[in-house]
Amino acid sequence: MKNYLTFFLLLTMTTASAHGPLPGRLSPPSDLVQAGLTDSDTTFGGTARLCEQVTFSRGLRYGESEANVLDVATSAIKADTPRPVLLFVAGDTFTGDRAAPELSRQIQDQAMCFAARNDMIGVRVNYRLAPSATWPAGASDVAAALSWVHGNIDLFNGDAREIVAVGYGAGAFHVAALLAHPELQTDRADVAGVVLVSGIYRVGKDASDSEKAYLGLDATQYDKRSVFPGILNVDVPIVLAWAADDSAGLVAQGETLKKTLCGAGHCPRSTLLRSRDGIASAFGLDGSGDSLAEPTLLLVHQLEARGLP
Image 1 (cartoon, rainbow, N blue to C red):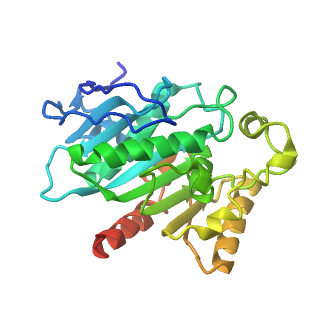
Image 2 (cartoon, rainbow, N blue to C red):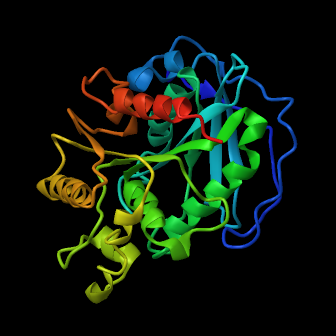
């Protein structure tokens, strides 16, 4: 029998535009229920085991689209002080992967639980996809989600001064594009650090169908919509990663971004992943070895140690 996690959505909030005023503040989450495990399932790398003592709040709306929702994961063991936030923006392609949504969610849940079990608050952002949502919808949605987090994460004992945005695949482009394009940044959409995993940062004339669906068919616009040169002005710490089994094109994208940042005096910490079958694999939660877990935790601890005002 297929095992599964049972989750309860217990919070709602009023609908608001992703490009308008900040969404209304939530009521304090006094009646959250811990996610209950139906049995001892460890399918998909141990989702059930990893998510023990983790509370989920599902489908919290941050914008007007049905896609503008996010999930929050917290430890059932309450901390005495506000905790750092890992905000996950994942997506293998700009058009998404709808082939196995339940599997995809469980894999992403593992990363959320990784955050919660390491004394952080995990936030997963869902955003609009191409072809119905084109440039710069992805980055704009990330900005709106960050504004929501700044306005509400204290209700989950999160510290809005210590948000680390983790962009994975297409999500890495959306996070990097938001940082690189000040015109897309909204009030309270800042982060303390970023982790970029296997992203496309500048699309060329050989763009894939997925990239064209998001960035458009006019290749003359691609450079303007890339993360260069704006990413060179970003002053928050960056962790950059790609995997040994990534395509040559993805590896080249990561290497070019690292070289360019280093040349500008903002050299990122970089990690070569052994494999990248999903965001959980990127964090080594499947036992694959070299992963983002150590450099991400190191970044978070550095942010905590510097004592943000």
